[in-house]
Length: 189
Image (cartoon, rainbow, N blue to C red; front, side, top):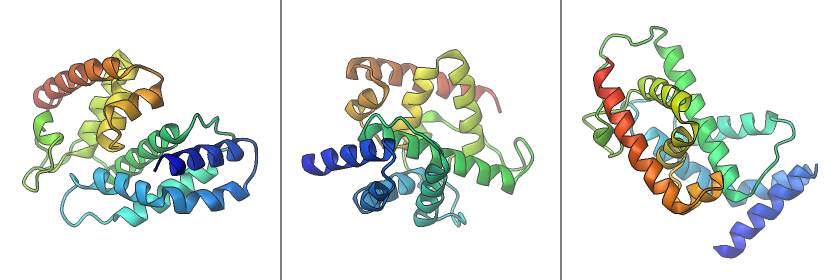
């Protein structure tokens, strides 16, 4: 596992230096983890969602490939950016499905429910995205931590590594962000 992480980081550095062949070697190494992130992103979506994990991974990878000159910081940075792109894809998909800001059937979402898989209570992805945008205006780092932990499935250490902060800071900001989002999602229907 450690060897694979080092190989992913090395390939990302080669990509950063302009070696396009590195992308072909990278895909098989990261595909399984990207599918895990996609499955995590989709687990709280409504039943019958038209996007499946494979399609979400492919769309995210296509968007990644279109970005010119990424200053890759390593494996955690790659997966963090992938999770962000998947969140954007899901939000775009949800907005396309329902052009109204909050259409019929919208319910306030408990953050406790949002962070636990529940077939009875899917997350309203657009409401969560809007709340994360409001949180980013107040504290961008907390918003990023939620995005990486919730959408990306990164643990506290990986999140800290991706953001260049300590695990202790991640834990503290994670608690604060969850409390803020809980209030925001339950008090702003």
